[in-house]
Image (cartoon, rainbow, N blue to C red):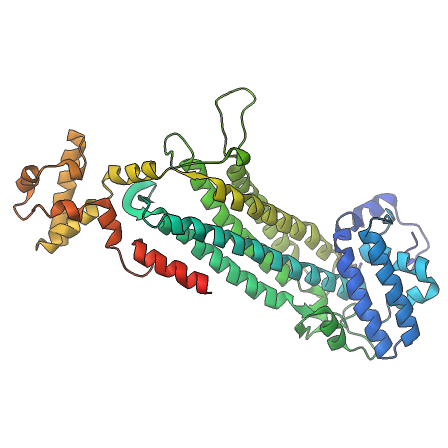
Amino acid sequence: MTKLWGGRFQKKTNQLMEDFHSSLLFDQKLYKYDILGSIAHARMLGQKKIISPAEAEKIVKGLEELMTELEAGHIELPKDAEDIHSCLEELLTAKVGPVGKMLHTARSRNDQVALDLRMYLKEEIKEVKRLLNELIRTLLEIAEKHLDTVMPGYTHLQRAQPVTLAHHLLAYVQMFERDRSRLEDCYRRTDVMPLGAGALAGTTFPVEPKIVAAELGFSALAKNSLDAVSDRDFVVEFAATAALIMVHLSRFCEEIVLWSTAEFAFIELDDAFTTGSSMMPQKKNPDAAELIRGKTGRVFGSLISLLTMLKGLPLAYNKDLQEDKEALFDVVDTLKKSLLVFCPMLATMEIKKENLALAARGGFTNATDLADYLVQKGIPFREAHQLVSKIVYDCLKLNKTLEDLSLEEYKKYSSLIDEDVYAAINIQHCVAVRQVLGGPSPASVLEVIQRIKEK
Ligand code: ARG
């Protein structure tokens, strides 16, 4: 392929160098955006009489044909092209003749690639948002069915106080809601049209970026040409948001892995989202959850690559910036695949309500409630805490739960304890009385679910 910049050179590019700097292998992903961007640019050039309307028309027609042929898989991209931008320009010129060489008037690959990447990411952000919404919907659906499904809440992975499965799931809904709002923020800053910046210093031609922005559906224009071609903050922001989504998925996956052990036995994953062992016939492994947990690391890696790539760059464009693409594409693909698998894995898992309840009843998750009961009878909390610690200690030796103790036994600890203690330490009751906004009572949880649904 002939080079867009060959004129100044006497020698051929070294083959190793050729392979090293070519980005076609990965940036061909951007072909659709590159063509759409070029169509908008050509139309604007025609409208502003920078090229004649007839020339613009020919270019646009050629680009549209190219799009159809590429989408149908009728043409192959020349493998020796430097990048998708030079490659498409060459294909266009081969198709429409010398007029194709006018397309690059008032444009550089530097503003062109920034445009393509922003168009690509805008679409992907919308898709990730759609997947997040689907996940939130799935979580709400499960939660609605488990408003009364008690389970232990944990601190330090030690049983702490009773909550419900709905409450537990809604914790993740909150995380994913924040992620959604981060995506919206990131979208706003991605939605900025950089064309007109040229290589770095704008252009002498009377271009009108707002025409291009309107055609491509951008809501803002870049305000500084140097920044327009060298800004990749939006890529970093997206990768950071993706990293957090992965963190949230990964924490959830860790719980799913734990919950599906025989030791917890809170859930059983569907066969369709697990795998077996080639040696141990009994195995059913939670691979999907483990892989999502594992893939979180590669998203962090991409985020760090992007930040590191940017930190020493002088203005404006530097070829280092080409490294943004593989990192971003991998983040997008990893995140989307993880969300795509996670959602049905969750929707199809079997929830073992009895085991959740059993775990909530063991482990003294109602010990705080017993202390609170004593406080209501007039004992200062610190003393009540001491007394209940002693009761728990004795129960552990007797292999009993708090519910197992007779009133007679309770009276030995305090004469203030009455028959009503049993209602106070009943697990369902312990959950039901925690009615603070954001608390686990079925009424509080339902209220939150309704608020989210309204949104
Ligand atoms: N492939 C390049 C990239 O991804 C396109 C811009 C090339 N610009 C340049 N001045 N060499 O960044």
